[in-house]
Length: 106
Image (cartoon, helix red, strand yellow):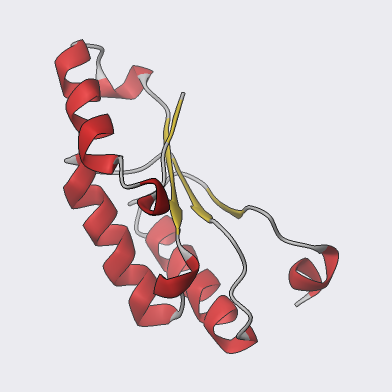
């Protein structure tokens, strides 16, 4: 399992390490996270595709919202985009990180 994030600025290096390891992709669980500044429907889709490109992967195992943005509309737009990415098979699981109960209740 490899945990990375756009906010960590390490996706390119993580992708290279995965390729250099010669471990089959299906044996490596890769998680990355959407940073708050990219939240919103369109921003989430763009950030997801940037992360995939940086990692040089065809899909992610887990995509998380890294931290809740204060704008509820952007949070909900991000979740909608993530549900679509999941439905398209581009990510195998979606979720949130660092959310409080009030964020989850939305």
